[in-house]
Image 1 (cartoon, rainbow, N blue to C red):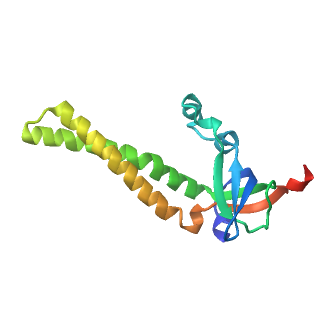
Image 2 (image 1 turned 180 degrees about the vertical axis):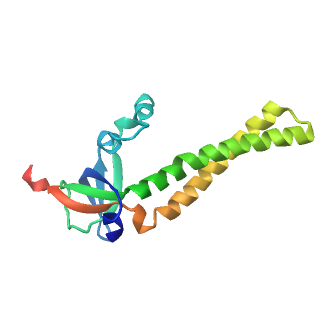
Length: 158
């Protein structure tokens, strides 16, 4: 937890929706709350992305129960790194694939547009796979896992 206190943090409120094995809980965070400060929220709304809630499974360090309203914290640097992996990696690989396609077309005399399109598709798929592999590894590191910080309201009070 000392890592979180020494850097900027992102705080969110959620509701515990389920108790999980191994002292873990499932927390629902309203998408609108989770994304209110995001620069891309307009694009999400246009694509229908802000209508769904976000569900996080976290360690039950505060002995919470179903219905409790809780505060969660994650370091801002972790959010930025995860965003770069999820968004930047596929975009960079897509562009790299297009450039490789154009290079191959020039080198071998192939149709430039078709080869660039094929390279773009291959680059995107490789970028998505790479992003998934990296995010799976990052998701196992403690600094990328949100932490319960406090119980705001008790589920039995409603």
